[in-house]
Length: 236
Length: 273
Image (cartoon, rainbow over all chains, first blue to last red; front, side):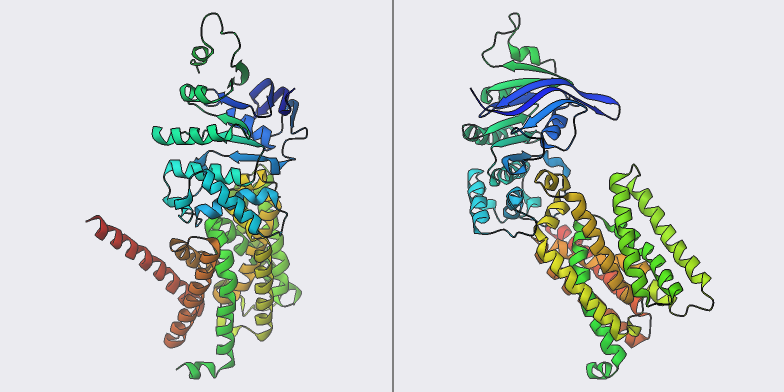
């Protein structure tokens, strides 16, 4: 029996009077690689925010690592959509990745040698050695995305949540990011939110589509009336 | 020239005030610039005028009125914009004006003319008493200590508050603490450039420093140096030409800002050719 990492039971969420998530029931088990797809506004990012403890469910139950969402930051790595921060910020890749160690430190505690070693390792894994001292504003989209993944890895997470890591970057870069995830999927539990249905189906072990309601399309399950599960999804 | 200036005690105090206030200004200004909270900082600065009125009304050193008043207003503006369903700029604008109004009323209630009011609004570095210098030094040390202890947390909430929350940091509490440090910096700089112009000296050195820095500590250091240079050269010019010191410092800083950007523009045009 696999260990459940995320368990949702009839999870619903209202935001500003609109039902964004409707009665989701889903378990993500250890070493799962779940691809979560669906249209814009379908609630994919909101779902991640619930798992992270940033939004409280209106109804239903969610547990992450057997506790309330947000209660185990040191075990979760989060790769947010990269659109939302300031590229002028004076910060080099190494210091960005160092932020991934925050969840392992107490208030007032300064970073130490162990933190720096974990950062070096994460930078290596993401293939960013040559860019470690570069300002984040001077990175390409794909490089920045890998730096954000390195930041999440530096915290040595057991669960990795990625929000559209391949949105708006060129196809070649997408492949390097998927190769990186491929390399990680034996060690971590991964939830990947994406638009990229065709590519993602090659890498993930489970697929779910989310459009306010959740539909689970587990690999290996019976295709729906002669259609492949994937073509059933393409409506979104 | 220099020995001649230093012969006057008020001039020595002015130089010390300029240098000491630059320390807080560069460090806290860096956060104001990277976190883009210039408007909220301006709000805190102007609300602090109510504290001057309070100190004046109670007949105590205005610093003792303005420190608690500006700390309280920093917390109130911060909480209102974070927790209540009020647009942030509305909250700030309201405090901005009401704080000044309270100051005006309190000063009006006290009979007699308030002679040094002008110096709180527009700064008068030439009249800084020794006691205030010690206060500035104390606040400097406090700010350095807090920033040294919470450097990694402040960096995290400046860069991405949501990620800081996800990492388990008390992001709102840290943000409020940061606003309190801004309030204290405003108090320090009030003597130098005055409430009305604080926001310029708080942001300009840091904004220039950002162009040349790859990390927050480097940006802070450069901003402290620039702030010191602007204050000292402004002070010197004001002495030479007998013009208002606070305003001269701001003009020097503003011109430097324009020159740096003009130079960058010219450079990029030349490169493009």
